[in-house]
Amino acid sequence: MKKFEKLNFITAGMPLRTGKGSYPDAFDILREMKLDGMELEFVHGVRMGEESREFVKSMSKDFVMTAHGPFYINLNSAEPEKIDASVQRIIDTASVALSAGAFSITFHAAYYMGQDKPTVYNQVRTQTERIVNILKEQKKEIWIRPETTGKETQWGDIDEIIKLSKEFDLVLPCVDFSHIHARTFGRNNTYDEFCKILNKIGKKLGQTALDNFHGHLAGIDYTGKGERKHLNLEESDMNYKDLLKALKSFDVKGALVCESPNIEDDCKLMKEFYLTL
Image 1: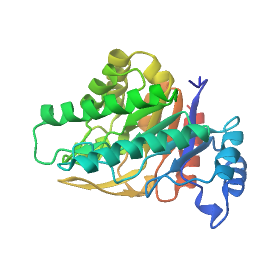
Image 2: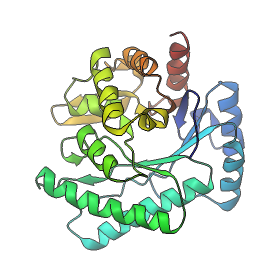
Image 3: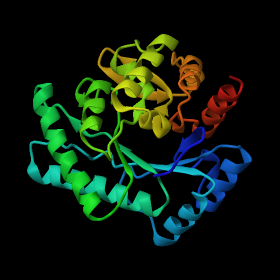
Image 4: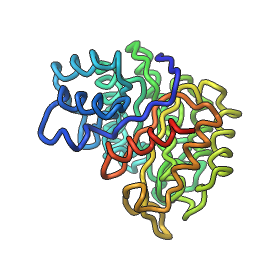
């Protein structure tokens, strides 16, 4: 597994300035903007040609890479074939991401489907065990990270994901701070609250979870039902400066992915503020 010396600021997908360009153009832009890497976005399907994989892997020596699995994942579907397809999508994401030099993948794991939390947890746990066992059999070592989700209908509050992470040695949380803020209807947006989240992760999962961190940040719009859409940081109430101060206080290392609509600009904004701390 990759070892980190600092917190890296990376974009969710290719920078917008890439336009219709390719990976070489995207990495040129990241370098010019002094950004640290990129999350590969497989949200509409795990597709990446061999040439692109090899190129991105060669760039992963200098840049930090993660990947986001398809949106069409529900490990708690009522239909067994949809569960099997979801498991396969996560395995495909892990396989392609690893071949492209990524250290970690994330995905939205499941929906409650009107069921109680313990029932859904057990189902997600069963399917996670399948995924981990298959990847181990294939000798593919990459962090598998369910993401904290932004709506109460979605499985994946921070406690559920920490609990799951304690059970498997390839599993850690992907902490989407904007989702946690939206899911709790505006709470979890102060320095003390961010520190509480990081302290809980460190205490329950150990230093490894803070030294190999994978998180998401964006501005967020939310309602009484949770997340509505991502916004640019300065257009939302997301208290990103206090979050970055908390990450600095805990000496968190790894990757923080910017998911704002203006991805590379907010990513640069985050990094530049962090470097002043």
